[in-house]
Every structure is written in C-alpha cells, then in structure tokens.
Length: 324
Image (cartoon, rainbow, N blue to C red; front, side, top):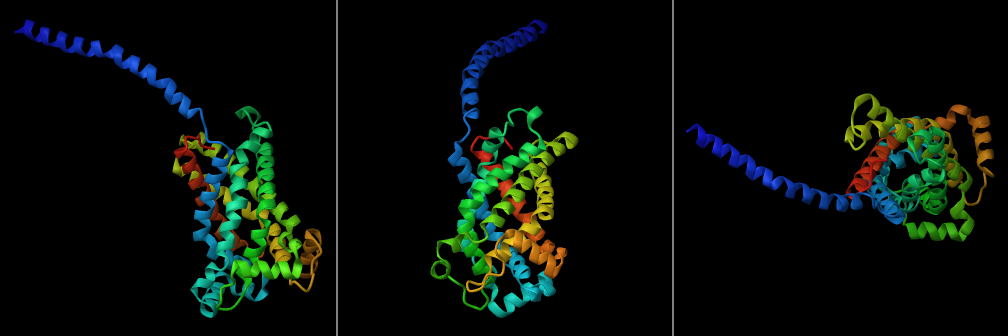
C-alpha cells in the first residue's frame, strides 16, 4: 500500500513538472508583448484629449460654485451676502437654471484651456529636464506647470471672457453664447475676446504651477510616509485636496483682478491693465479685497482639482500610462 502511495505521489509530481517548462516558455513569449504595450504611452493629442474630457466632466458639476464666486467678486452686495445668501438671491430672483449660466462657454473653455494645461504638464516637465527623480525639483515642476498653464490660457481666454459675462448677467433669461459673442465683437472688436489676457496668463501660470507642483510633490510624500501606491485613489485624493488649498492661497488675488478686468463695462474702462487693477483695488478697497471670495474659490478649487486630477489619472491608467 505504501508503494502505491509513493507511485501516486511520483506520478502527480511528474505530471506537474512536465508542464512547468511549457508554462515558463509561454510566459517568456508573452512578456515582450506586455512590455511593449506598457512602453508605448499615448501620444500628445491623446493626453490633451484625456485632460479635456476630465475637465468637461468636472465643470458640469462645479459650475454653480463658479457662478457664486464670480458674483461675489464683482459685487459688494453679493460679497456682503456670502455664499449661502448669494445662492438664495440668485435662485430666488433668476431661478435654479441661473446657477448654470455660461456653462456652455465653460465647456469650451475647459476643452481648450484645461486640456492644454493638464495634458502638456508632463511634456513640459521633460522639456525642463525632469528626466530622473534626482533632477526633478519642485521649482522645475512649478515651471513646467506654469508653462503649460500659460499656453492653455492663451487658447482659452476668449471663452473665459464669454463665460464671465454670461455668469454675471442678471435676470431670468439665460444669455446665449452666440448673442454674447456678437455683442462683444460689436462693441469691442476682436480685442474684447482677449480682455484681461495679461492677468489671465499670470493667473494660469500661478494656478497651474502651484497645482501640478504641489500635487506631484504631495504624492511623493504620501507614497513615502504611508506606503500607498501612486495609483491609489487615497493617494490621489489627499494630494489633490492639498493642491487645491495651496492653489486658492496663491491664485485668489489674480482671480480677483482677472474677473474685474473681464467684467469691465464696454463703454467705460476702469482699469487699463492688470497692474493698474491691482493698485486701484489695494488703494480704494484695501489689500484684503484681493482675497475676497476666498471660501467660494476654495469651495470650487477643492472639488474641481480633486475630480479633474482623479479622473485624469484614471483615464491615464486606462490608456496604459503610468501615474503622474
């Protein structure tokens, strides 16, 4: 009986060892194929497309906060009401749909501006010499984010102007993007679409530089101190929330100036440029005014940054790209 058991064990072992070489051979045949697919990341257009998709999805949900933030920045009356008071007044006087005024212009802005500032970040990092962890400094990350932000801002400025005008239009009727564009062209010409371009580019550089550098750096710290993977949703969430807070601190003054410049009346030029706007706000209203609307800006940046970056990271994973 013992011999029978030995015979069965030897047969079982032999049957498995016979298949091991074939399994190893199959693994060796498949490995180069897997390596090839992982080593072939999407092209620049695909990266920009993924960034644009993430941005358009995000802004559809976040737009009402942007409407509240913009109303508070342009009007002392809304500023005195605060976020909840502004929401009540806008919804009561103009209807719930007013919270999405200008959302079509916002979609076009995100498809142009945000797709470039997110999608061009990694190519810009390489251009600034971020090729290894040793030479990838915070300053280089900030510079790469700033460069991508400036390029995106140049493309998205016309839609930014239209969005700002549509969001601040009071009344129950929702202004059309075509009608707003025609009116702007009639009264101010092509230059009207690039009103506030200097402050918008500065804002985009500070915003995207802070956003991408803080997100990138925070991810490194989270991975180092928690042991979580870069691809973990928890890692991405913590990093995005941190980036959103620091963005609000650095961007609020530029956001205020940009909004004031873009919302100037067509027949009255209150501010000649970004520097003039900065000085007049500080002189006439005090330096704290530059941070007016901090809470609504943060309320917008926190979910916007988190959703944008997480969706973008997930799309990168689906397309076979490594995490940022």
